[in-house]
Image 1 (cartoon, each protein chain N blue to C red):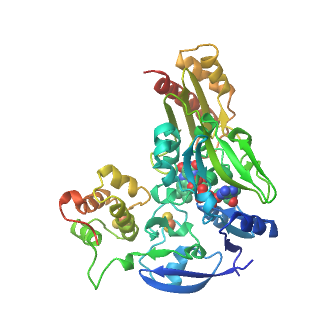
Image 2: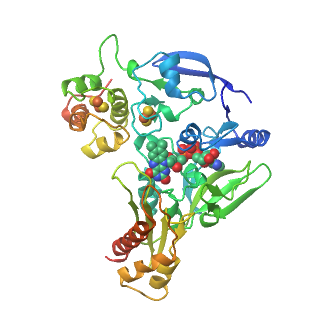
Image 3: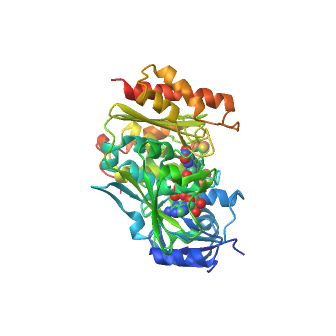
Length: 276
Length: 162
Ligand SMILES: Cc1cc2nc3c(=O)[nH]c(=O)nc-3n(C[C@H](O)[C@H](O)[C@H](O)COP(=O)(O)OP(=O)(O)OC[C@H]3O[C@@H](n4cnc5c(N)ncnc54)[C@H](O)[C@@H]3O)c2cc1C
Ligand code: FES
Ligand code: FES
């Protein structure tokens, strides 16, 4: 007897109806987290509601509001989308760090944030770009900032029956360089031990980190030192990141090592985007 | 909601209709119900690429896909490459370059390489490494594999793949 049911949807109304019918029904996008999680016993689900064929979720467009990335768009499509490469290359760079080519053919950006791993590689750049998450439910739509979206490890503001429909990268796009630096155990496929996004915006900088707290976090202390107090000693600024994070020890690294790595990567990021 | 799903799809050019259990993986379906055992299971968690097949021309780790998701799609497996008993160019190139030892990774490697050459007939080394980033070879034949794929590049004046 199969352990769960499956239904493919072709419109949003149908998806909302099916998600409501069974409180153990969950949306299925690329399935790269879900299938592994279900098989490993991490998730127990009653039904998978396949949202990939819903046309509205497949949009990828740049207009006067910014860049809208539909929830069913694969990471490979995001990485090769001209307006993203030109205006916000940091996002393409971070998406490229996720898994492998074939995984990125199916994995989505929305799946990455809805799975809400503190180490989700797409999250730190979205924090720096002040992305907005568009959410829809059976009755109403709402938009939340990416920082308000994450509430804990594996947890988001989404309520049962709600879907992320798209993520918006708002204009104005940052004038200045951005980098995503991923510290991991191997050069190939691995989750981040620490992930750091550093994005310059004119003379200011935005910094966010993954895998060092229950959710991705902004490095407010470092940003303040640089943006408000004019700190240009990047090593000194980077040291302040210790006040912004609360890492734990796990198989990818000890708490102390994560503090160290976070500081090193923030310093390197500042050097790369603020100089030259 | 049904736990059995009817799927219409094509496999290696042949149209098929089947009823599958909702939680069946595409990999198990291919091997145990379509009896196409060229596609291999290595890790079953998306890391090794031994199970890579093409869905509508795009490489997918079949261990991460449900058989139910095959509805409306074209599936191409390693068995679908040869024409009238003749191996396709990428398969021949792997043989000519001795691009394997045990051969377990080979079907997945060839499917990834096929898709690469379709979307980019003249790949650079970097393009090849990117396209094959999800294919592990425990025998370490990477150098020969890259050479085999490169030999199929249009840059070599050998024309396009069939
Ligand atoms: C081999 C391998 C390597 C990986 N490497 C990395 C890595 O380096 N870095 C990294 O960050 N991740 C990595 N991952 C994890 C995974 O690929 C990503 O998190 C991916 O972006 C998830 O997207 P998906 O579309 O596959 O999500 P799914 O598995 O389909 O869904 C993930 C979760 O989000 C929910 N969901 C999906 N879409 C929506 C929606 N629109 N609205 C509401 N809920 C939704 C699902 O119900 C589920 O709970 C890896 C996975 C594999 C298999
Ligand atoms: S068996 Fe699918 S990636 Fe290893
Ligand atoms: S030839 Fe043995 S795994 Fe690649």
